Length: 237
Image 1 (cartoon, rainbow, N blue to C red):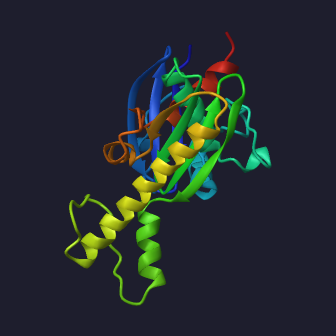
Image 2: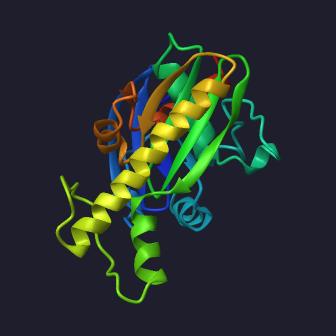
């Protein structure tokens, strides 16, 4: 079996994982503008991306297959239209189903630039979900949409009652994200045709799990596992 470099080219960074014989043997993250030569060497590289310009820059520097283009998606998608569902969400859902094998279905909460919720059911695929702004986008919207509020880093987390404008913004953003996550868990568990395991992924996964105890497990790089599974299903045996 060849070595695979799985890549998740997002809006803020490039996550990468090196897979050999069904095991992830290395992983890391690079800025979007990093030299592609800093990525690990591998016989094959496959990327999932919702950032076409960043993916194009990467593909000019090295041979990279794209999930959803040269390589089919790892799950079917019940979406209107199916192609409008982000390939990163599909890859993440496939990875989460693989990493939580006992669950008949999963609710994947991916905390990054956006907070996306994706519901996937075994032997059926992705059946839908939700999208809302992540903490950085909320902070930017407050700064750009008002005359007096500053742009603040929504991290680190704040406790108690906000005693400054920056603290108040951080607390408000955290409450919005955590409250939305809880409401999505409630709604989607009620509407799902099967019981759902709730999985957090993405750069903000651990912080989201701390704020929302209803989340059962954290798999930050679920999308990389989805890329690996898509490649493995098509690799010659």
